Length: 390
Image 1 (cartoon, rainbow, N blue to C red):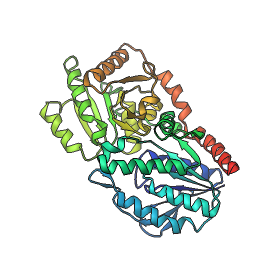
Image 2 (cartoon, rainbow, N blue to C red):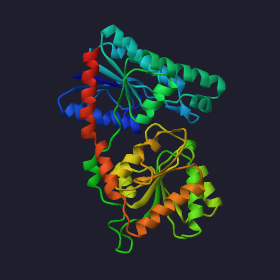
Image 3 (tube, rainbow, N blue to C red):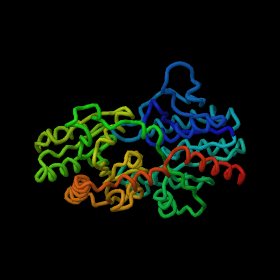
Image 4 (cartoon, one colour):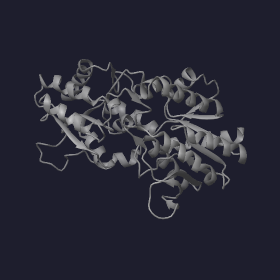
């Protein structure tokens, strides 16, 4: 099978859930003998086309900033979609899989699909709906919502990365056709071979060196300030409580300043961006992962925590798909976006950990269904079904 993936951001030059998904699926499909191509922005030096981990990467246009003033660049998305057409239309594929966000490239893929009689698959990582008004304001938000709805109308073959996203496709955009749910995954074998951080420390320091960990981009939607307030509450009964904040982003300086202002600098560690193995080591060395995001398209770090045997606390927010990954009270908790509620859930997990009550068995069993090797099998079944249908 000759497959094309279309997404402007390309792993490992850009690291995020959608980028990792394409990389992991593409790499595994290539190992099975499929001819895999990825069309994205040229983030690399040298030739426009190169071979990378068995895949053929096509640099559609020069590297440009994905974000302007903390928001996805509209001009970048438009330029990428325009430059994509002459590059993509040159070759014939059995199937083209385009990541829906940031939308404009979907119209290009649809045009190529019609011209070349090639099935196009639209992969939905999230559905924004009326969140567009919060993101861009009332006037610009209206156009964002209209474009998202237009993409839903031109698609014939859809993949949603979660049941949550599928439900939003159906309820928000009125999509009635069949939607395949094929989640993001984790490399179970890789994660199982990574040691917890601190394992090489003295005997006194071995084990869980963090009570709490957050991992993600430091942006407003992640609500890390609420987590810092939560740690302040927990400190009243547990003066030694320790929280690791792994990640970087535009809010880091403000968050560090806030931490100093409320006197939490000894309890909150800003670890910065972590390479993957180091991040997994830190998650394994933690008692609970907290993800207080207002908006998550999937929540990759949740299943990474599950693969580490670590329970998760997240929040009941309208646009937070991560809450759909958690069985409340079994592998973590879903609570309100409030420091008191989050603190109560964290405290319960920490106390149960101290009492020897472990969540690990249930969590590790759940993580197995998110193994990339299993997911790629289901992706191939879906792809063949789309090709047969068209």
